[in-house]
Amino acid sequence: MTQINFQIRKAAEWINLHNGVIAYPTEAVYGFGCSPDSNLGLSRILKIKQRDWQKGMILVASHMDQVIPYISETGLEFIDCLLIEKDYPVTWLLPVEPQVSQLLRGTHQKIAIRISNHPLVQALCETANSAIVSTSANRAGQPPFTKAHQVRNQFHDDLDQVLSGNVGSFAKPSAIIDAETQTIIRAY
Image (tube, rainbow, N blue to C red; front, side, top):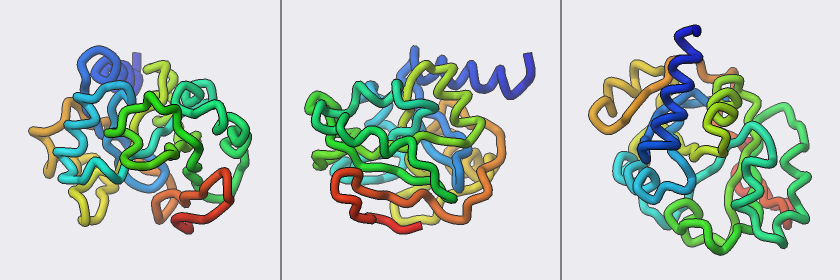
């Protein structure tokens, strides 16, 4: 087993079995992640980031089946937007299933979802057999980190694991688009 496969398997164990919080490379920056069903993990991320719960967080997945449990029946009408390919990463806002934790969705009636093309994110979601939380690895209001050593230096006591790897080639975090209205919330 390669070192990266071992890291991914261990990270999936932290997420699935231990309410763990990890950091991992995404398309543009390092992200903090946990199980979207773990209120303890979500609370830990909010504390680490010093972020208000009202803002909500993003889910990343390797395929649509992993996010269907978080989308309301009404939202499923718009799920095909997740398959739209663009030249940059896009996070879509879809109507949220009412039982989804407010720590994940914040005060919103929609949930932010991205199907990731980043190979490490895909492998992590596949190994965890789940979507995972994705929020930039930084304190609220600070620039996000793009290197594993930066995350380790700043957050080593707060995280269960930092996956080594390269962020993707994108210079900025994903665009955010409301699937229902096609309103661009954050441009790329």
